[in-house]
Length: 244
Image (tube, rainbow, N blue to C red):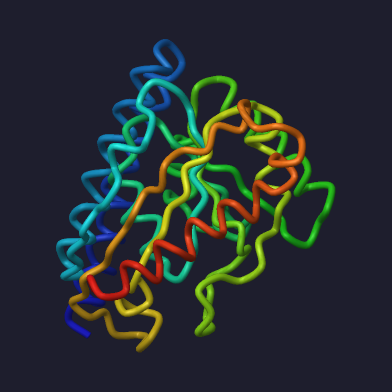
């Protein structure tokens, strides 16, 4: 429980202390949005690294060289833990927004940072809202902001490697032609979800698959995009089991 208490105290203090920083970031963004993007990324990356340190989480990263640095991408990953966002966000080489459930808007300060980081809030109970979120993500990609999605739609609480994908999120890549980077995360549930509310010292393996360039696919392969991404994640998941 000590790790959980330490993490909660740090997060609360950070969210309170960072309120004036958010104001400064807002002002900077009015004149230099590119500077705001970089500074917000750096601030939240620092906070996430502290959370990982307090949690005792160590991460082995494979295939990071596969992530394109010169263009926006669509990250697609399996989802087992709240820590998935934290562990992957500290690796992003450029501003990146995450698709998140709309309930996160209820959390003061945190929701502001998420907006600054180009996160998109999805109401899973409203089909029209879901389409608006996809369109917003498409605009982010076109403006140079990467997007990360977990197409299972929720954290996987089963023994299966993957839940069925909600394929709508992959329309982001189909409409923009951006590269799709599969992310496979092994052992994330052992941090918290497998024994809530305790946080345990855990080793996690994250592998970034080779990018799938949607713009280079023919029509038949574009229709199979979801299956292609899932196959990469499943293959890497089984391969990396022995590394955790």
